[in-house]
Length: 425
Ligand SMILES: *Cc1c(COP(=O)(O)O)cnc(C)c1O
Image 1 (cartoon, helix red, strand yellow):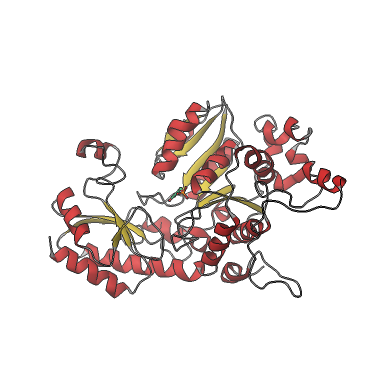
Image 2 (image 1 turned 90 degrees about the vertical axis):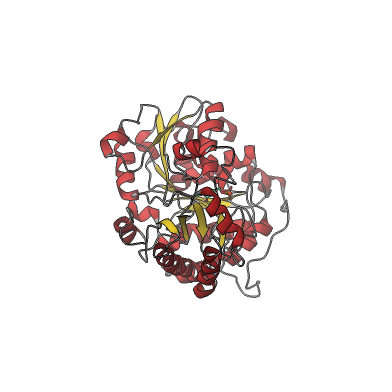
């Protein structure tokens, strides 16, 4: 099998004689057939082929195939956003009356989805502290629990998840472990190697890497044995009346989970990625293996600089020696470093943090992370601005917390901008 760098550049697309070297954008909603019977076989999932882009599109499939290979999975499906990927990953195996478990330190959008919107659908979540003991976490499991969800590196908290430990807990209770691997990317961490069963991404972040296209992906390892828990996962193991009584596990084996997500959820809910965005995502993926190590290298240098600055109150980066997650990072991440995102606070609290951010020149204030350009966000003034300082602390966000997504510019220029901004407060 090709090494990860080669897969980033060439994976998924093998043109034949005279075909385009670069994956083409199949900007077509529909595909042509010669006979009515040919089309009927597609609708029955008896034959493979394209008929309508809401279900499958050749450009999207190439990119999904590349990401499946990067993660070491058997199949993948692109979605319109990371939010759609998180939703489908759970909704594919949970329905009203079911329950799932999630770690509490997750992306704010995912938290809302699980806590508010999924409850409206009758699906209940229990949040657990990922650093609690096995015993403590296991208390959350119920007979109707169908999945365990966590983030490799939490956005914005930066906490690192011990995937191997979580996989053992999930499997002990007969449910799959679903991992949002957005911040680590398969270049730094391949959750399937630590026992995870399903991986999701917001491809909007490092995978695209240029802040051009919102997107998401779900990858299946093919390792979870749905049939071993036949009664728990009837949606996969028993005939689907909306697909002529076809049972996904029996008809598609290791491809069951992604086929169901495509044939049922994408058909009914339609959160497809546009082929144009899939094309842009693919260009991003071609340099993922070059960009991610540079993001990490720069983040470590910035973290060390900030740690030694007299005006900086604290720095949180799992790649820094002495950090709570330092040892786990060494074990779980390919180059020992988590990603390019770190958090810190300046002395003097909220007002000084704002003054510092307003003084930055090259580093911009944007609601984004994990793209080539360095950027900052102050949750207390932006994403969580309705909360008082007391409420912020309850939500685990220090009022002075600055989320810094370190880009791939020259690190001396990044530090010079920090230096001049710090000198102004
Ligand atoms: C951004 C993000 C999401 C949501 O992705 P969108 O593409 O913005 O919908 C999910 N998980 C993590 C870790 C994220 O950073």
